[in-house]
Image (cartoon, rainbow, N blue to C red; front, side, top):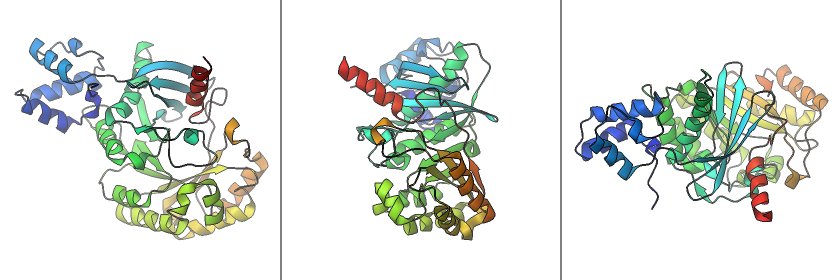
Length: 355
């Protein structure tokens, strides 16, 4: 059986593990700092540990569970990575250069069962959840990418919006958040982390009660049940009324703003009347909602969809603004590489099938 990645343990769990194995508590702090401050990739490089402690760690854990297969770097500095897991399945991770720093978009599942009809991530059904260690490792490998190039840059922001539904892998995602947020490790601030969900209502309510000041984004993509159910299967289980009830609960519990993601699909959800419906949906929570209008990245397998024209996007934006809704048109990243989430993995799997 494959040994687990030590990245999957929180600092508290690492302390507990060392105590259970007859070691002193401070050993956990030493290992933690080697992993996340010095960013070593071999236990043997932890020079202030005894040979016995190193052997104990090597017997029970690996550090990095991922193998880098493909790296694509776009002209705007966006970098897309294709990683192989220990069981030879593949996942994608994306680094985006923003005005405020380096932001990494992580994957939480191999494949996705949500079944959004416009999405490249859902072309392959969910095969398994990622462990917390496999999610943390994505951040670490991106950081190593810059370390190895001698670039003094640090991953400062994280978005949990890659392949998979994060709240369908709730426990591992929460463990991941605790690891990257730890102030003695990567110390990525909670307010610099955003988790996106397609609308698993019970988990939104649970997330509201977790105490972490992590941002929440909702993949909405339609202002009414008819349109949303036609493009997002999850809406049949959790229609907009239930979703908005959960959002209201989240806002009431946290007093934090919620971002609504809205992919613009030509002729599907981008009409002025759709914009007005969306504005009406948001009107009772204007101060604590934010709408992110997203240009669609075409996917060959979903050729029934195309991106909205710039004129339609601007018209939609204007309707929202006139209704007092905070909104922005998302800046595109990596348009000269496999831009849509899941496309690089899908392309690589097709190559493997041909060969």
